[in-house]
Image (cartoon, rainbow, N blue to C red):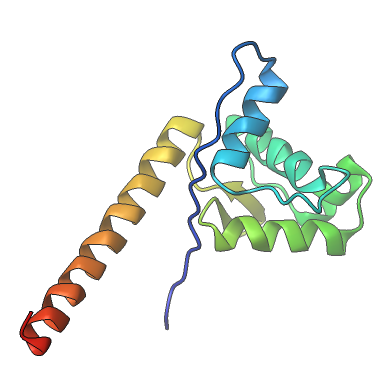
Amino acid sequence: MIIRKKITILQIRKPLRTTLNEELQWFGNSLGLFNLRDKDKSCFRVFIELLKAAKAGIPVSSDQLAQRLGLTRATVIHHINTLREKGIVVAESRGYLLRQPNLKLLVEDLKQDMNRTYDEIAKVAEEIDGFLGL
């Protein structure tokens, strides 16, 4: 089975003066979590609820998220799947949680994932170069 994670890092200038909400949006946008087409910021809202669940250490189900946010379950599942694909969210027996209990640890995990991926790509590049005599 191939495990795929789509990790995107965007260099976005952080506003000088921000609220906590704006900081969280900048954080998520910098990780490519939120899409410009998401006009009602439903993915951001799902992310915030998952952050709250991580703080409490209690998984939250898609039904609970849909009810809390006034979204359809299909919309919630779509956003959960996107966040899972990006390696941010994991499935637990009774719902979903952020991969780590806080954002600092989450970023450190993502960094390790990226470093492993870069190392693997560099190894393959070296093998290809050897094959091509470069």
